[in-house]
Image (cartoon, rainbow, N blue to C red):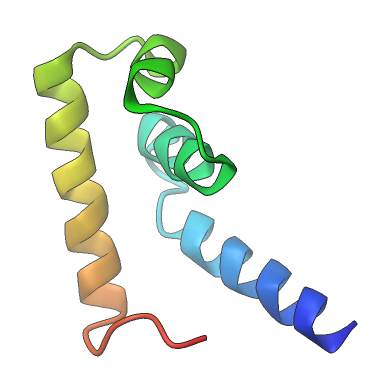
Length: 72
């Protein structure tokens, strides 16, 4: 039960990084759910270049928030 609560909190914290960017948040949620890049591009309406750009933004924000990496 504690593990489930910790997982839920981490997911919440991760998604909170993208409260200002619904497309990035959708991509993060899609990644967590195991969606393919094609599915996420269709979901968000982004073309390949815009999707790749959004993925870079996601990586930068996560790296900034967790500079030592993600610790389970």
